[in-house]
Image (tube, rainbow, N blue to C red; front, side):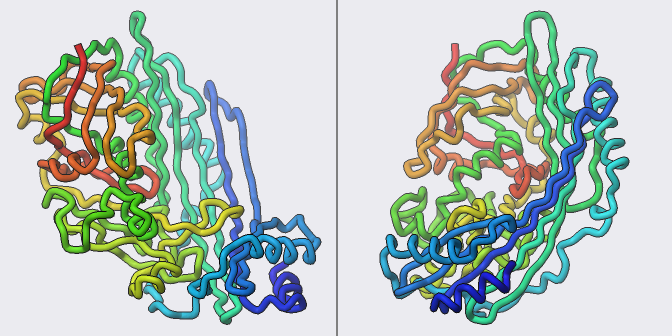
Length: 440
């Protein structure tokens, strides 16, 4: 399919192009009541074609089922005509050094059988029911594995590819006591071959059981420990503020800050690293063919770097690029993070809790995606667990946490060592002061 498309491009006088080919495979085993309920297996090859004609970019997409090559090329040309010409539009031409990544495939994952996936999923369900007598429903315990093969070709003679794979498990449980009912969800994905069924089940069970019979919190200005998984959610809101395009368009929390200025507590170091092979955001190159690299975004509270695509690297004369990925095969590449890693501290979470006479262990912020990603202001419904005399005591709900995301970064008093992998975000729990709790 690739060679005929390139031939058709040349026949139509299109000399500047790139083609991204992705083959995705996934197998999911779902169990219910001790039996396999569903087996889902999928395989899809997608193509994203981008051209430059008269300095204008056009993009189209297709699958291996589409055979009308004239239609594919004409569609890209037509769409380019609606865009504004820009002399900075270009395709990768070996401007950046290659990285040392050689192989992202884990052969042990490739060899995991459906029978082994079924065994893992059944164990997740079994351990979930065993975790606590109050868990009366286990929904969709599952084990999955998948692989992605990426090939990048362009008119500058670049032709390269890499393959990666992953495995994991997930479960939803429901706990009930008296009139209180709570749901717990755990999803774990890894590039290692170890799926710990017991840990997945117990994490889900713990999340459900710990919030049973929650009461309303009282208004106060507590020190707050933000749970590691919620910290990951928080950084999905913060991450776009490091994208150079958002900086330039004043759509960033840090638009007014320059490299070298303080934006956070000295306790915070944030890294974007697609070369870290332990996490699922690992990639040999991005979807513009640019080699990936490690970037320190915050270095002990100091703004140290931004994330670039090829266009802005040229516009800003930057030595950094490699963070341009397709959100899906139907869209233009956009700047995004790969593996976003908040460096962990030395103190354990348990020691951190013991050190507080009062506070809240914050587990949920409802509607966090609605926080203002430019001003940083938020006021959101929340759930958590009271900290009293160094111990987690009563679950609390129906209170509002108000503050500013920039203040969370600046008022981070401690980073603990309990890093959790939430997809391509790796975050520990943090202690923050200065947030307002509005409850009873």
